[in-house]
Length: 333
Image (tube, rainbow, N blue to C red):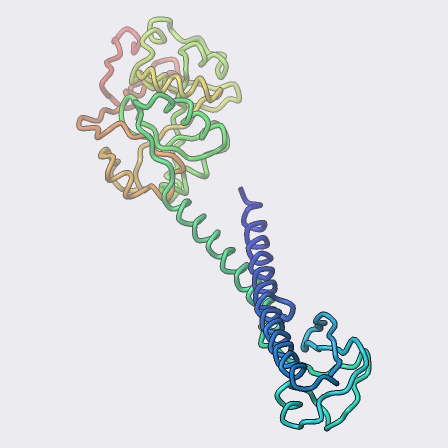
């Protein structure tokens, strides 16, 4: 969630500032502990003075503090001891036989503490550090995207969810591994993954043979259509007047993914433009784990196949590529 990249640094910076200020700031625990110890020292000296000088009559208010100092104030009128040594021992300022008035500071101590601006600086630095950590973690996630096994119980649902979210996925098809994305809208993702536009339209995969009639008004021989699902690609005249290549794959898992996605998906070989298709899952992960948002692992394709491509846009049907499926000659006359 992107908002965490903002919330977490702000929270971390504020937390560090508060901790620094409460523990080590001008009014922090450390400073107040020093002042408390100073007051205890003074009271111990006064107790000593009381034992040798009964005229000493000074009582203290509680400590009062500001950003820099702590002061101990006289609470009642009295005279300090007339012994200069004892005066110094008590920590009093002033001369011998000096009268102390109520509300007058008799000692001011300055504790050690971390200035407020340093506390704020620590907070800012901590916030920035957490921000960069968030960015780093996000980059690591983006360079090592999700890989799941095809035989896992929720693999079809996961693949469909990625496709519906507009992500680029690598799926095991009935012929070989392929880059896939929803139709339309994912062409540029696939082109970017392959390196450049090869100038070839991508094959579109259908969940059911009859789905093809959503995209063409042409009559397709029942015998030819009944060959689906199979590694057979048909190039048809679409409703806009152009041509599109469709296949209903001979893979029940893949058809389930397409059905759950709710739209045809593109499929094209997994390779950089101008290079041979990859069939080993280890090579695919090594080469494209930073490109594809999801890779579905179905092991290595030791005997990858190519689909047979038949152009049925003209009066005579033509085989553009002979693959594993053999089309009866009656459809080619």
